[in-house]
Image 1 (cartoon, rainbow, N blue to C red):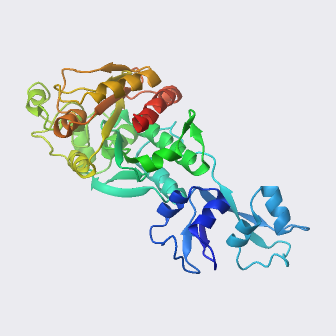
Image 2: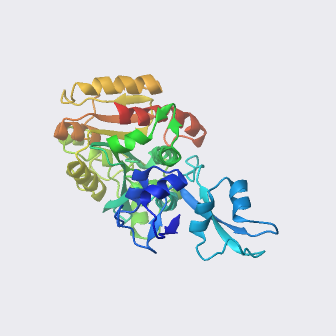
Image 3: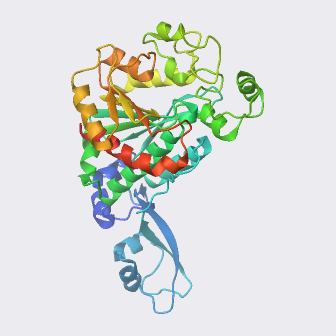
Length: 395
């Protein structure tokens, strides 16, 4: 919601008027000096939208404010050209409405278009969210990173490294929405005060690493050369439900230089629906973007969300730091997922991250069954994963 600065207005005043934490308002308006607002300047108020109201017989600002449980000055601020002593029946007023509901519905097929729509709506409502394009997919789709918070501890989450594991993006996005709601409404999640995390943690989130692959699984092959290539790799089969790779048949989570040659020797040697590690490491734009992001952000910990198995892989070649065990034990406590330290698999993003940065890295396998997991599991998976999201902030 946008407001226009009046004489004497401050960001602190807006924080009190709308009951929104001051740091969220400051970060929503990086162009505005907190102590030097200009009259007529536009200020964005996070967590609010406006509704339109037509003046009825007998209405006054006081009556409308009382019925809507909003302040008189909030109405005056949004309607600077309206004389409150001379309201006209049928006259239109803008009223502030605090957003207390989710705009993200994760429990549906979650392709790149759904993600883009939800990101745009979240960014409009919560402009303190920083949004950056870290690269592009093979087909040119934006690989979006979101950053929330101003804390020194950078915690990273990502989803949909594998195409038919797209439900991980839906889970991340729904929790992100709940996190933003808790911040702007000064609420708790599972009894935890959320606002302190804003100044302790910077969240880095890449919700969909493989947008081309996700769209292929959910919507079928696109027109043109990329669709033809995918059909050829899939032996002409139009059922892409088993497809894990990116659009040109490279498994993005087998692309990292962490014993890549070991996996390459025992996996497909040409493009395939799953498991082909590429002809060499880091050939795909999606994997390059994620590697560069890790180098740029200095993650304090990294969580890659996959499906399925209800397990958490947390070690690599003994290079993981000792505190990784403490963290993963807390993840187990809050989710019921079983920690597994080592597994005979290499070249994943988690493996490479631990190898390169010696920081805690985790591959979290959500749900049980055969990928793609059915949406009937979404609510259960969401409840299990919520504890892991929260624990990654405080551990």
